[in-house]
Image 1: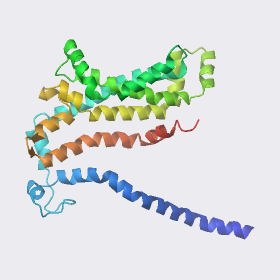
Image 2: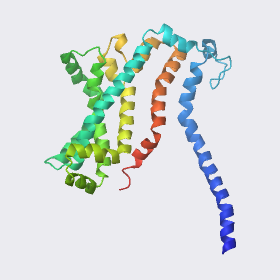
Image 3: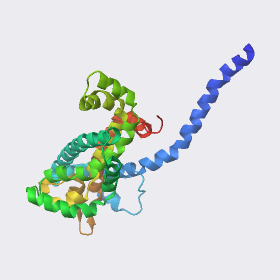
Image 4: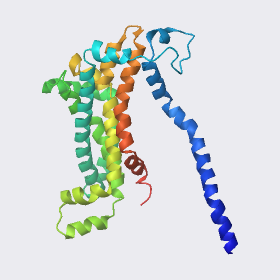
Length: 291
């Protein structure tokens, strides 16, 4: 018996090491597929115009030397690029805060409180999220004009929650239902009200789901194109997605080097946010699977 256990102890670590190698080796094609667009954006942004226009050069690496002219063009020749980047950050952060605050309150009410029509109201929230933005922007532009917010980034801060709040609400309803009711009942016995219970008990227990909702909402607002294109014509107030499209594509002329530099720069904040909150994001995706 002792010899058998000794053999298992001797060969088990090696077997686990080989298994890890097999698993990570199998993941390499998927990782390469996911990172390939980012890699193409990065190396293209560092190429000279002559190399990009040369049909005989390999498009998958840099053959004629690295250049930063494309990034210099963005910040020196494109007058409003820094404004577009700051506008995008500001609009994304503010609209995400609004959507998460209202979505959290709505999700908790629908998941925990009992009132007439709660199930129908929850279904209505989900159906609202399914309405295409191409239909919503038509009445929303009347609201924006009535409030005098046309050609300002505040028009986006006001309208983005129209599609983000239903999404956050529907997402968080499932996470709040996984929180045991007994924990809330104990808080009620100790004298906590609904709001204090939500803030001190429910939200900390559903934190992975909340972080997941924040990441998704932030990504939606960062990548949004239609509302920004429709509501804002002022160059200074535009967001990154619309500003780059309107400035670096003129007719049938594409400034590929600067386009790739702008898209890579616009992708970096999303990568940094997901890198810092990846553990919460993964936990949030699976938190509602098991009670």
